[in-house]
Length: 294
Ligand code: GLU
Image (cartoon, rainbow, N blue to C red; front, side, top):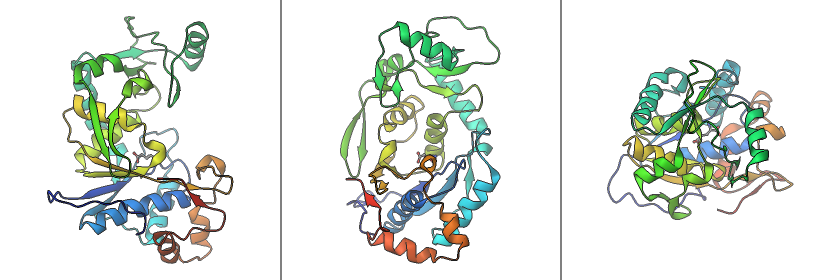
């Protein structure tokens, strides 16, 4: 595949990658490219390609999307090398991880609604992170007695004081210093759904023996949070490859919300899945699509 980064498996590690879609919408070409990167990286190094369905958010995940995702992957010829994993079956692992972070004294309950947060942000000078304004810390030093209707946040600055400087490696972008503080106190356990993406993905990558996290460049900054959680939870450190993103004709990344054409439409219309994948493999993009710089 023309996009694969240089990598020599000098230590002979068992290579395992994953494609981890959230089943809250249909897959589009950007997903196909992401799955292809993870698949071909693993196979180029005699490793395994895993599919993990990130169906933890019961309010947005839909079984029909899961069926379509698996059918799309089979149609494209990107079959996983082991049985498909489901985050909804792993809640107990995330609870254990949360308890461990709690025992380190790094978590606090937060009862703030979106409205509370925007009101507080209007009053205090705000710090902006990659995800927008940081949580203003309203509940950080309050004792919240609530038994329900709260989420758990991590006191990120306190956590970083414990871990010290955090580093990680990206095969395309090189050695990185992680700066999770820029995100503020992120939510690790949600009010309306169990574990947050950050906690669940970090725990699963470790439990699944993922040696190389291959995913889109849009998730690059989040690695800082994942690296923090890995160190706190004493989990192994994977290597990352944040691959470039497929862009539409206005230079925007393909996204579900922008109604990029669903792969399933092409599949059901009888298009040739492996041919589509082979073109992507060679760097031939459909008309109107381009690739972001690495
Ligand atoms: N579930 C995430 C998504 O669909 C991907 C998470 C990841 O690869 O770390 O965007």
